[in-house]
Image (cartoon, rainbow, N blue to C red; front, side, top):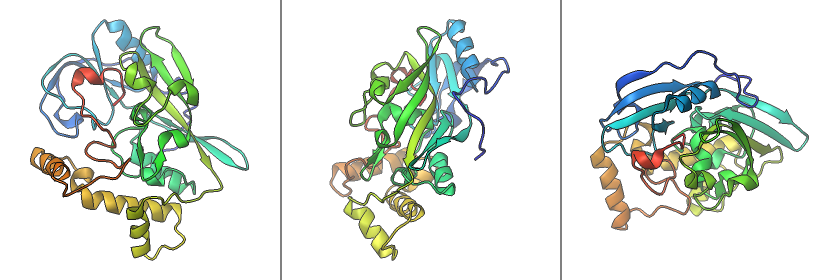
Length: 289
């Protein structure tokens, strides 16, 4: 992943937004469902969001496409969030602040922080989706939630056309919830800033994770080791997580849950990247999913 100067996510991209018509969205949702967008454009910065707002079209915002079920064609302007950039924004003796653009793949950000020697996100490894989607659901797994490391974010207000900063309190985080779930048609998240502690300590409260590390001989695990263990557990339980899921595999996994053959732990990713509900396109408006 490239380390780029994100700052407040302004001025990253200055090319006029290019609109396309009648675009196939099969490749842009992780279930591979066939649907077409009446209009389509890629978002590389707030200027593109301004242009989309001025277009007068109804808007549907896509990130990684892992939290949406496309039930049919969309008579709307579909915006695909492709904003890129990750950087260390500031440092102190106790913490490091990392800002990432909303279009970055979440797991890529996790692995980038690990490569910089920073812990804190390892329990959230391999959750599908983009950075911009993470605050919407307050993603979490194996005892860690996004809000535990969240500092702030920048979002585009579709009502006013202005950028707005949100601190922790503004986001109103709860279990798999935030203000952005309830203001889905208003805000598009553009960048997220996380605060990671230098004095890292593993969070191993879930027995399955602790057992996996024990089996690997990791008695004093590093952040990398915890991430590897989480990825191994997820890959075994949900083999389609690394590839496009098929409908039979999706429903067989769901059937296993309902029949008690597979019991997900609290906070564990289940089907679509630690999302508890599969959304219709209308429910996905302006979420950056």
